[in-house]
Image: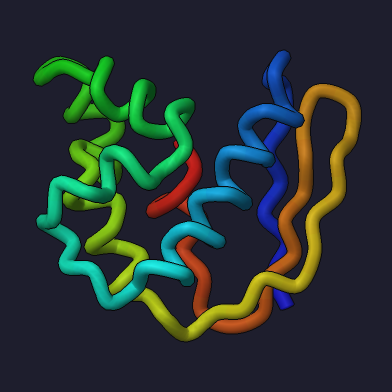
Length: 108
């Protein structure tokens, strides 16, 4: 079991909800190719907007989510994990997962 802790963010509930929704949307559409343009319409707009606002200078700091395509590709390639629970805390949240989960792929 692994605990991913995200702290010191003002909009923790929104970020956690976006992340949970992205996981659920992915699971409902996992057979859709990572390069399909439908992902941009399916994913929570909070995530889509965050990824779209990144410019070339940002990629040196956060190349793991450089595009919607890479975001979905990472979901499709890293499959050996299970969401166990999440917990909101003041200015943050915890996600508890089991298996091989690489948090850096999904939370910036």
